[in-house]
Length: 155
Figure 1 (tube, rainbow, N blue to C red):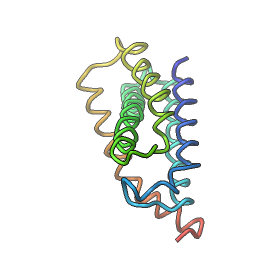
Figure 2: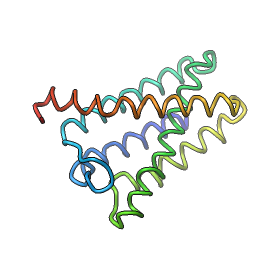
Figure 3: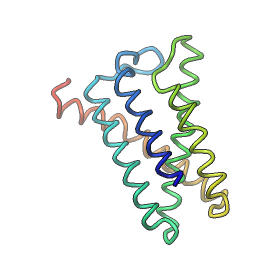
Figure 4: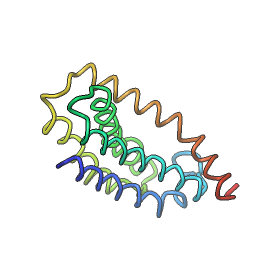
């Protein structure tokens, strides 16, 4: 059940970011407001939980669910390197999320996709899913920040 281990590591990563990233932001990327950022994290975490549930329940029978899930896992593994590790190296200050990303999301995610499930995937499908999920997530973040700011009054 490496899927649940990955979900747990992803949640820990998001908790680390929720606690410390808003105060750190503005050094490597535009500053985010605490409540808007946390709202976006809650939505992304819920999406990760939903994808994990759907994959465990239906993944073997659904190529769409399977590839969306693996694209999400790879996106979170890559997230450990860019922006977290890159930000830490460039700013010479620890970027929140780097430790949990490098120690948990990256190795567990890569092992889950390329070790545990390597026989169930094709390279073109995996690359496409990774690009689709990453682009969709990046495009959704700013609107989620704004919605969170409005909902919480953190304008």
